[in-house]
Length: 298
Image (cartoon, rainbow, N blue to C red; front, side, top):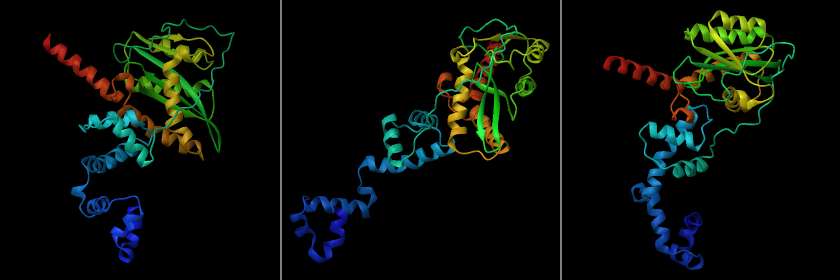
């Protein structure tokens, strides 16, 4: 309405137009004055102008996957005091939103002739320290070159991805490679449990022997039951939502590079609600800092 008055005020004048339109001249002059002098705008509008680019920056710096809650949490970590409803309102205005996870796909194929270790986790995916409990799983992705398979090894304490591998084949070697990466990076001691589903790769002789050689106790859940490996399924779901489903993948190499970037971001910058809305690396650093302080006090 004010735009209409701006367009015709020279010809007809402001007051005559306002007599025809349902608007008072004082209201028009108020809005016109705010356009020429931003300091006269309402406090909320001025604050929105400051917050909007910050919200846009947080969303873009975090791979454009954060929804309202994660953006709000990150702003608070940056000492920006803002209400969650304000973040939601401004994200709607900016036209940005978080990604939404789809339904999980079953990838477990059991070999009934192969003996399986006991389930030593029983759906209790909690750990008191790093390198106490690892969970492993893999998922598949369609690319223009054909299917790619990505295996992850996750440390339950801080949900940190400690090993991963992308392959064109479902053979045991690719999940073994993810395990080897985790062993090299973490060098765990004894009393570590490794939990997976009953997929043939994870209960294979080669995989089981490698766990025994590293002094790791194996554990498996039941076939076709995502709850028995729920934490690994959750990481797979985040990977699919935040990487895979957002574009079409021309090649496995392209997907592998983006997975590398995502794992680095996930471990060092992504806020996880299950560990207090901090990144996994920060949660582990906090644990080691507390251990050092306790040792000094002792």
